[in-house]
Image (cartoon, rainbow, N blue to C red; front, top):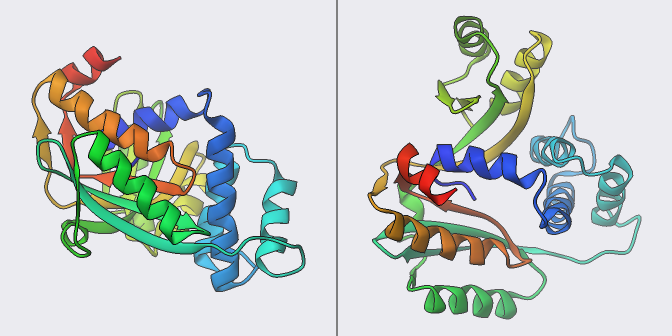
Amino acid sequence: MSGHSKWATIKHKKGATDAKRAKIFAKLIRQVEVAAREGGPDPEMNPSLRTMYQKARDASVPLDTIEKAIKRATGTMEGVSYEQINYEGYAPGGVALLIEVLTDNRNRSGSDVRGIFTKRGGSLAEPGAVAWQFDRKGTLVLDGSADEDELMMAAIEAGAEDIVREGDSWRVTTGPTDLHTVRTALDEAGFKVESGDLTMVAQNLVPLEDVGSAKKVLDLIDALEDLDDVQDVHGNFDISDEIIAQLG
């Protein structure tokens, strides 16, 4: 889930020990396959594959599993062909959601996503109704022990756009084509990069001002993310630290 950045960071850390680890692995492998099929098997020549490869490694996906996915994508091993689809909709409270799907059955995915929206009090929207509210960005999560001034200097010199403190981590935002360059520079400067990904960042945020409203939105997002075909859910919501604490 890529919505409000503080919550996204919490979800990233939770995912390392979550019971859904196997499902997370499967989704990451699917992303690697699609990137390799579309741009070729060499990460150095295929920026999308390089990003997905590193994302999988950040999540501790075994190297041989990643390599098998690339072989399936390039035809040297038997595999499944996936289609990329985006769904757009609204969660309770008018929160805009952009859902990224990789599927081998468009009808199944559409039915599953529609069913979740209906059961959880949301509504699907027409294509284009939501996507314009988001910009594609690169995001890096770093160990929070890094010195702010040193990190800021290294990140800005490498081409980063923004640096924000989030709990016990730092989040660095980059342009979509600068993610690898900034990550490499921070790695070489000795900073501990915990994860990196391309995500959709909302231009404006809708504040969720009580626990009930926040729980409805997050329950809808959790249900969407639990679908095998759903790769990412992006939202334009804002949750305060106080409400995050109450949600646990």
